[in-house]
Length: 178
Image 1 (tube, rainbow, N blue to C red):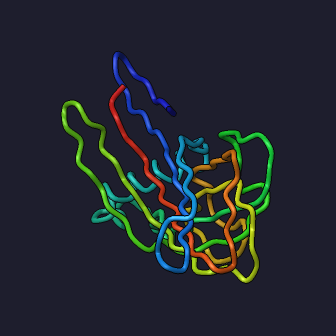
Image 2 (image 1 turned 30 degrees about the vertical axis):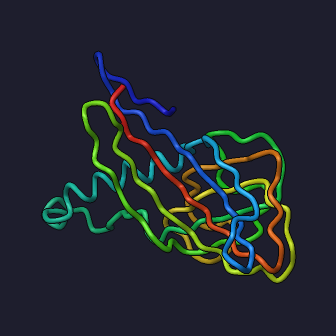
């Protein structure tokens, strides 16, 4: 978990991703789920977005003329290998990306972390791919490896994404006091 600590407290952000492939009949072919690395660029994008949401109504009077959002948000899957690091700025070998299709949040309680979740739906690929990694790009476009990599996940065993199937990438960030 990435932690920002102060005198006796702080905030932690933990990322978790899942990848599921679905057969043409809608049944699950394969599924992977696990914790990921929240990237430095992602933490920076989240912090800048929080600042903007707090000053948006008075930004002009403060001389701030450029809004900072996480959008457009794109999910990506890849076929690469390597060692994931919090300094990563792109996937090792990006295969495909799609814009966010759904999002939700869960409020924090005294015993449960606040959570944000986004889903990315990938239609049938032109060719079968063996997926080994995934991530989310903030301030992104449809171009491969463009935008700010918020999180990066390399998983094993890999998951085959046949040309007949669809894929769902789900990304969650838990935000908690530490």
